[in-house]
Amino acid sequence: AKVTYVDHTGTAVEVDIAVGENVMRGALYNGIEGITGECGGGLSCATCHCYVDDAWTDAAGGPSSEAEAELLESTAAEVKPSSRLSCQLVVTEALDGMVVHMPEHQL
Ligand code: FES
Image (cartoon, rainbow, N blue to C red):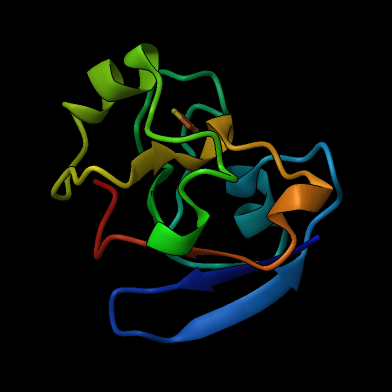
């Protein structure tokens, strides 16, 4: 499925990510700067913070889960209603075309 990553300057890069893979690893595999993913997807670092584009909120499963929200309190950038931890966002066919925005920094 195609996912577009937009950095804080507005530069967008579209990549193809296998269904079942998460949006954090999709960024790492494709050399997208802006997502760090220090803990490797273990829901313990909050350096995979992203903002799901408003058009994709529902498809992406709505706002962050409670566990994500708790961890997002420790993230470096501003937390918004659209904030998600990208390692918890699993790519499905329904997310083909999804756009995520990345904060200026993760640490
Ligand atoms: Fe660490 Fe997502 S990669 S919380």
